[in-house]
Length: 84
View (cartoon, helix red, strand yellow):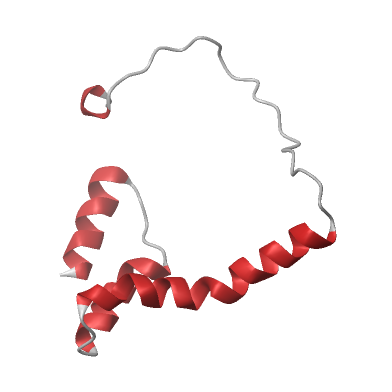
């Protein structure tokens, strides 16, 4: 099923899956209940989140993006259903 969804989304939206896309298929194949998918996702990321927290504590400065938007101003919003 994941392969078919990947094919459809790639064809229709041009989006490629990340590693998390296939995690559900792997968890399902291993017999893990779907209620545990989100906790497993969170636990697997805890070390990275903790590293970010420790970095922030060691240098408690606001993170300011260095990029500046230079695109067109005052663009109107186009709902997804109306976009080509």
